[in-house]
Length: 345
Image 1 (spheres, rainbow, N blue to C red):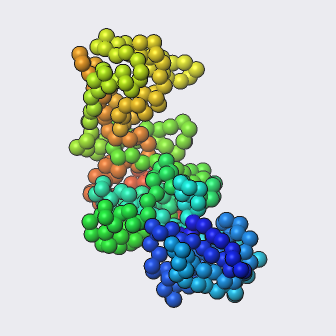
Image 2 (image 1 turned 120 degrees about the vertical axis):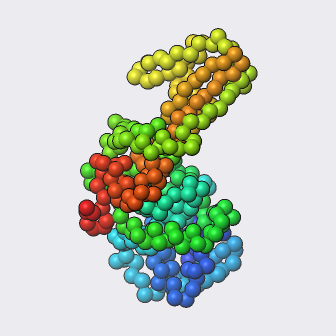
């Protein structure tokens, strides 16, 4: 919501991002919520202001004024309320500015980003719980979430208005979903987990020694995915331009282990797996290489890293009546489900 501030003549001017949807917050009946957001922003950003007069500015124009004369800043502390309308999220923009919004608004953006997958409500609830957890974890660990975050790229809701048909109806649906999973999160050994999810796998998810809460479980529904197998071709000329080395049908490929790491040797030129995957089209962590006379074919099985929740698999489960808490328990069997402040069965 807010991304910058200025103190002039004893008043605090707060600047709002033009892309943010804030019309409802400017109503007279919403001054209490605005005051709470202002207090959070002042506290989170250590703003040296102890006055009462607040002005909200959009594109250089003051659109609302607020008087905080009854607020005692000395007794104010960050809310311990984890409710989706009270818990505040800081989004760190590419220019370094911090934009603040409620957890509900953050989850709206997250769930809108999954619109094209045509997911069942119980799957959207599962995603919501994962990102509830991620929001709590990120604010605890870093006090912000990056706009270009690894787990989900942040876009303002205005971005989705033109992308989603019947946008208003979809927003009503996800608001209901957010309310249904309010304050619910996942924890392993009393620590928040990361929101690992992928589109589909080859019938099984993967464990990871670095994240002990990730388990390998059967997900045979994924074998029904229409995109189970995809491929992309590269001519040897294209590969020469990409890797800056010579390629032909006689080029030799070998997997080499060195210093506990795996490398791919291409005619004795060493590349890490990450370099290969970044230079070529790998939409899956399981792939095959086929060499033809004139080109290389990369065959991908599944889509994603295969960790945590499978979107396709969980969607098939939800179609058969499985609820979100059972979906999460299936894909994260070592993890416990909580709702502030109680453990859920």
